[in-house]
Image (tube, rainbow, N blue to C red; front, side):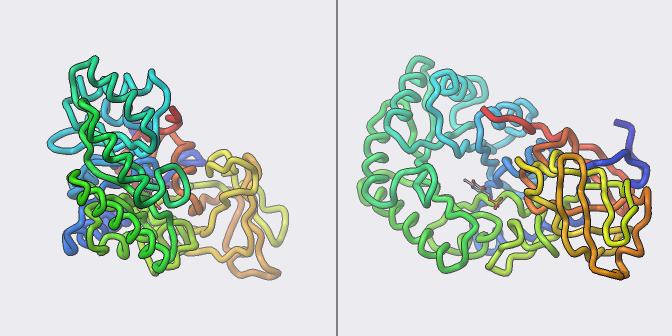
Length: 376
Ligand SMILES: Cc1ncc(COP(=O)(O)O)c(C=O)c1O
């Protein structure tokens, strides 16, 4: 797209913008931290879904990326992100034989160990092993250990599965991941302890554990410095989604700070009421499953923060309501373009074909959101 050099004010709206300086600042902060404390970073690409962002992160020092879905891995690896020593780790379990065949096929075509997957059930392990045997390759796997979603219970059940996996001829057991969710420090510490204790039990059973992964944006410091965690898997730090950049959403309890680099450019299309304005970006572009869910948490006009009282979404509209006689409301006018910060970056990104990359108000590039809408 021949957008480079245009001012963002020239864009048709709604449009998803990425502020390059803030985005680079976020990456720099994460990798400065990881290098200082000596922990690996494998960012979760389900958040940002763009091959260009994967490449930026790998250049910054990422081990590779995680994806939630096989189909996300599929388009990203076909976009050329698997150069050098990088690999992709799929964090969601597979039960469908066609998908398992596809997974093993990547290792046939791209090389062994380039696409790893997660397991929490011996039936999945056996299906993958059979497929790998037929292809004559070894499939690298890790166990997902549960902190409330999929995954084996911590402790002996995880060790038992690791022992069974280690006996399968065409699987290579690489380790475990125990994603602790964006929780407070105390809970993160408890969950990390369960993850690391379980990894140690597997080692004591004579099975080497190379990868012990956990951590989200909201817990990257506490998890990244926890002894025994070898890599962290944050995703939304690249966008710093949340008011004033509060890491994951706006509930982060761990004083995590990243800058809001992601915004939805939207036009004020109606100013007929004194205490509200209506823009052209609704729940469909914020990525909300229902109207009203995932409203913007911040608004900026001409780079200045606009204090609104409430934001509500319907499918194609965002209504910003203001307090009586609000000075900020008076600054807004019909036809004006304003930036709205989504409170859930992952679902917002998934709705758009492109990220418009902006530096100092001018468009530098357009990055396709390569893995948007990839659900299988
Ligand atoms: C397994 C797993 N790891 C890592 C993450 C990244 O979390 P965040 O985007 O909060 O950094 C997620 C997010 O849901 C996840 O499901």
